[in-house]
Image (cartoon, rainbow, N blue to C red):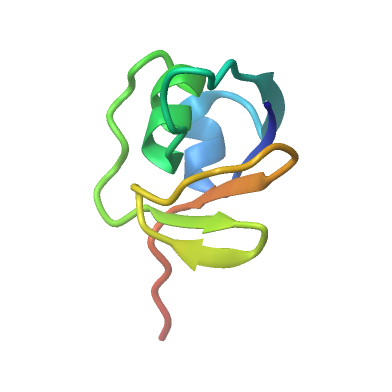
Length: 80
């Protein structure tokens, strides 16, 4: 399974890259957004209130991914 991962704003600095494409073998376990974060960031903690999107639709950390999905992580957004 191939997942394209995008990191935005301060999360790009936190992780040290803007994007990456990772391969996963999911024959034994379902792949969640949180599991991808853990692998991609070497178990760095996911900052509180991080927004997550799969294929441009907001999801929670337990959302399941499929081959070819785009997974994006955004810091909390404030307005004013």
